[in-house]
Image 1 (tube, rainbow, N blue to C red):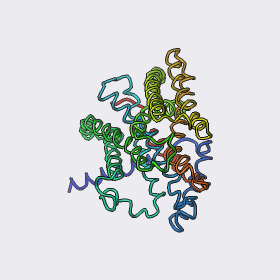
Image 2 (cartoon, rainbow, N blue to C red):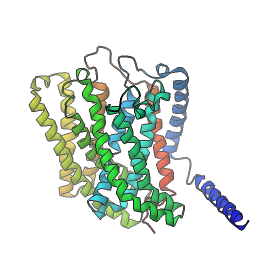
Image 3 (cartoon, one colour):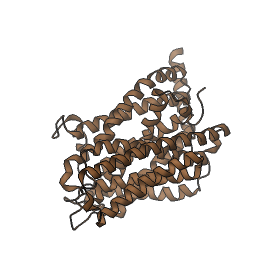
Image 4 (cartoon, helix red, strand yellow):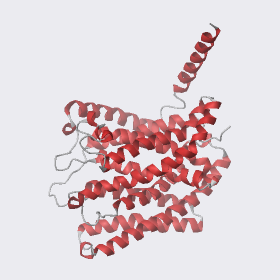
Amino acid sequence: MNTSVAAGGEFNRILQFLFHELKPRGPWLTTFNVISIPVILAGLVILCFRFIYGLGSVTNLTQEHPWGLWLAFDVVTGVALAGGAYVITFVVYIMRVEKYQSIVRATVLNGLLAYMFYGGALLFDLGRPWNAMNPFIGNSFGFASVLFLICWHFALYMVAAFIEFSPVIAEWLNLEKARKFLKGLVLGTVILGVTLSLLHQSGLGALFLMAKPKIHPLWWSQFTPVLFFVSSIYAGLAMIIFEGTISHGVFKNLINPKGHHSFDDMVFGLAKGAAITMFVYYVFKALLFIHEKQWDLINTSWGYWYLLEVLGFVLVPAFMFAFGFKHRSLNIIKIASVLALLGIILNRLNVSIVCFQWYDPVHYYPSWQEITVTLMVIFSEIWIFRWVVTRMPVFGSEH
């Protein structure tokens, strides 16, 4: 009897704690709330129409252009932008660079939420979302298909990222034994997560190897998987700088002054890594261009667009990262991170939408409904991120 009463009391305590944590904190009438809430509500209404009346009711997708913004940005681009999680965990837990330990939790949380929301958004783009499990079981695709591998890598990486973040949840719930146990699993899950990231980041590029006749020659290469993987490294580093800068401004009351100073020092290290990776990526692109002898394609409108991407959003921010690191200029590094992120978005959209069936006289343009739903996904992820960091010890040190 005493045991059951104690269990009931513990359960009631947990419910009261969770109810208290679900209560909103801070002012409601903020700029972000005023903008994001209507967008999220509008996106939910659009999704109702999408699932009731089909994709054609809210998108500009056709049989000729079945891949749209929801797949190109939410999945192909979003996965690259979430690359900071595997990069930082590799640096901290495998290479033992303790300098970046303080940003591991926030980076892993950002990566986990990105995979959950962007992966979940893939269901919006499937004409028959109830068949989403087919690639996992090899139905109609086979166990040797790239999609089968990507789906399993993707799902397993989300599990690994959750385990990496789970000690924070246990600490929040004051479950000390669970925290110690889960922390003991982190190193193994980091090794698994880094391996899975290497595979599915490059696997996304491998999807486009089968579309050689449909992609403009300047954007198709048999080394696209390698390019996708390398670019995900500097995309992740740039996202850490961009997201970390915003977080250290918005959540400054959750971070001690020492944390702000240490983050500024870390930015220079991240900028150095981003510069090196971007130069490597640029050399790969240059060698492929020379090897394929594509000089005749440059003096065309598509060639100018290609130069804008490779020179303006790869080479220029690479030099800016290097210059900012050498001269200790945070502002230049922050601008470079924005340019690098825009370059990743541009590259992924070029490969999957803009230059896909580039010869077709009728091109695909996303509808306003598609754009609204994409913004809804982004805003929803930010809402969850904000809720977690204001309640769990994400920016604080372990007790």
